[in-house]
Length: 327
Ligand SMILES: CC(C)(COP(=O)(O)OP(=O)(O)OC[C@H]1O[C@@H](n2cnc3c(N)ncnc32)[C@H](O)[C@@H]1OP(=O)(O)O)[C@@H](O)C(=O)NCCC(=O)NCCS
Image (cartoon, rainbow, N blue to C red; front, side, top):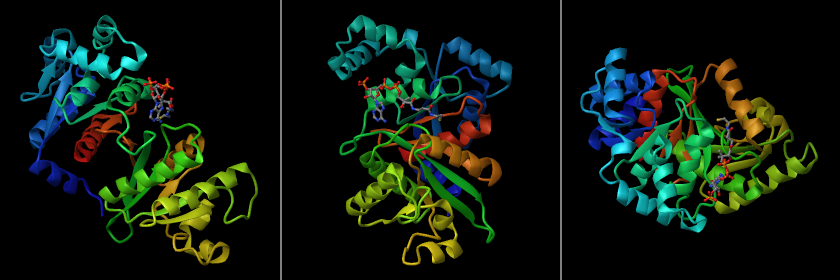
């Protein structure tokens, strides 16, 4: 089952470069100094070189070995502008507009990943979710075969047997009102992501109804999405629509849906919309004592992740390891 040791072992074999868009933030600097000490990740800090160094010195963190890149003084800016214009040509972006946009660390850092100068990106210590995610949607784009970018949270708490209990929940952060087809993609991507964290996914499409016990458009949406997901991914254990109690309690499942191989033992939860998902993962985090790792963005061509603006240095450190390991 999931532990950070396994991800660190993966990274030790092939240390990845990770861009931090907020290079002067003390939380980023603390996490970077810990990552550098571990020698399994190569931080790239965006910002004015003197300002980043001064911020690290004042906060007392050793960032020797980190690469610092200033968007206002970047030797490959012409190449970056050209690529940016090509990527945004459908929007008619001019070189002047590109040069202006690329002064901002979120767009500049995302382009470093796009150009192959870095493997992954972690932002959002001060940028909003939308400002961290939008450049990735526009420049890194969805990987072949995917229509949307979505997200999941990996939820971890110590289990009774000493092993960690690990769950996946989606989409709690990106798609506000996913369609049936969006939900199929969200389930498929979340299951694949859950496997990286040692979960053998048993996927429940959640609703206020179990196998037709309730009626309504939202019930139909989850049932239809579930059937489409079963057809799209016959390799996965999927069932729905299920209420949360039927999904996780073997006793309730025996009464409400005795023939389901998922009900009672679900560990990967697909919520009908962002309201349910965001509230749901926070209930598990605040009342269920789960650590919440995410949102982990799914469906992009390269890993980019978003921090909560209220994050601490420990969370930056954990998310950096997860983000880089996904590369
Ligand atoms: C993801 C999100 C930030 C995008 O917002 P936005 O930038 O205002 O969205 P826009 O519709 O202007 O789209 C911007 C670009 O991203 C693309 N895009 C938007 N959502 C996408 C998705 N889910 N997958 C792939 N591409 C997407 C659009 O096609 C557009 O591309 P273009 O510029 O090449 O035309 C938005 O869906 C959102 O706000 N989600 C909720 C975030 C949130 O509050 N989460 C809770 C806290 S964690």
